[in-house]
Image 1 (cartoon, one colour):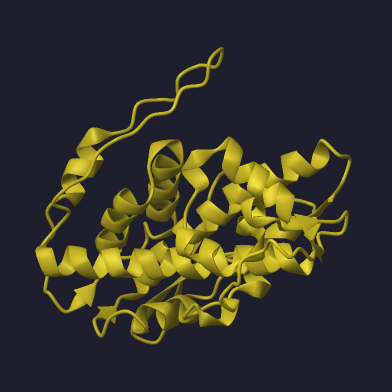
Image 2 (cartoon, one colour):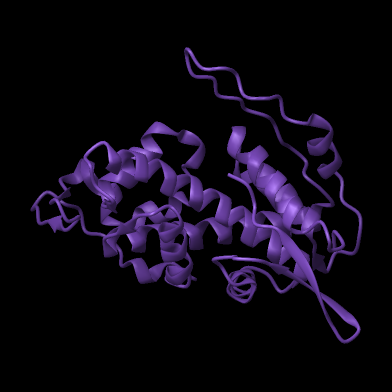
Length: 258
């Protein structure tokens, strides 16, 4: 899945980076960062975070879409989300949301009907409200755009889960980016490659790119694009990490790394 092309627009003395067709507004992304840190977030950093989140959500939706297709459905329901994550551990992100969502409480007796509506069960544990997650429910419009791009729709519970996962993932990304700034780089990182029997091995990741992100330059007051890329190496692994980094670089290539 390729990234949307980036283009630069001149507005007075400033060059504003515009990512055509972006489902998530950088202003919303910056709002999540403000809940985490007082550091300034550069424009290119906001676009990079937007791109990484889009890559992750697109992959999750694609997996859910394929699960729904097996039942000849184009409307996604919560069990499609569980199937997508179960089949691809690389997209298991924003896991703090799981504590707030009935979708991830199936082991406690939560079941869904054909429309994705929760079937009540006395065995279900008491859950905290989804609204308890800071920043949740900001990305519903963007989630619906991503769903439309893949030719599917989703029941409200599924949209809510994708919204919550995006919010929690961005919060975790913001925390890690702030840590990278404070510590002057990524102190620990690694590469994980998953291979499926009978399928060709994915192309090797550019280790030089990871090493380049392990030490940062710049002040300790601003989160820049490379800090987001470094945080991405912490949050993601495998082929989705490679794709997220590549697409984030592509959409910010006409903007300084800061």
